[in-house]
Image 1 (tube, rainbow, N blue to C red):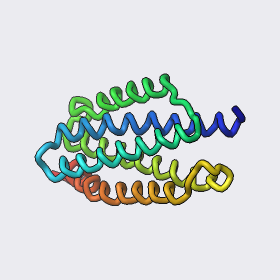
Image 2: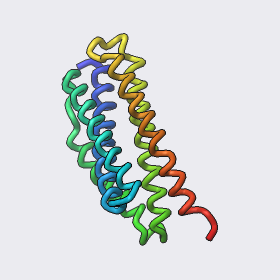
Image 3: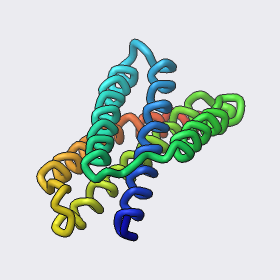
Image 4: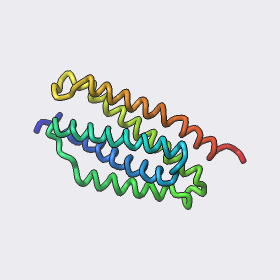
Amino acid sequence: MSNSNDAIEVYLSDHLAGSAAAIELVTKMRSNNEASPLGDFLTWLQGEIESDKASLESLMQQLDASTSTVKQVGAAAAEKLGRLRFSERVTGSSALSRLLEMEMLSVGISGKLGLWLALTEVAPSRPELVVAELEHLADRARQQLEQLEPHRLAAAGEALAPI
């Protein structure tokens, strides 16, 4: 395998691990916000993230890129540690915990957008990458960020506004 193939395999594997951690986080957030507009949004977002993860797995298959079990386990462990960090017992506020979780999702989706844009950049030199599909995935990430932002700002208002 050439250096560029090694690099793309590592890069994609890192993003796959991140998507698994994002699914764990959004699943936890959904359970804490059931039967609410936020819960409904998180249900939609989870489906989107799962679909994007499947697209990434398919792309990895096309590129014959293996997944790193160590990274998958590491991402799961990091997500579990994140749960502790965002715990109301640590933050002192369920509203602040929700804001921090929202921001973690925002960072993750921004990273996913960066993934699709980076792959679009190298697509001319990699015929197995389909630019139209990558552009579609980038647009989906932009939409996810756009839909998340009002919820993140509402969480900020609840968590940070003076009493």
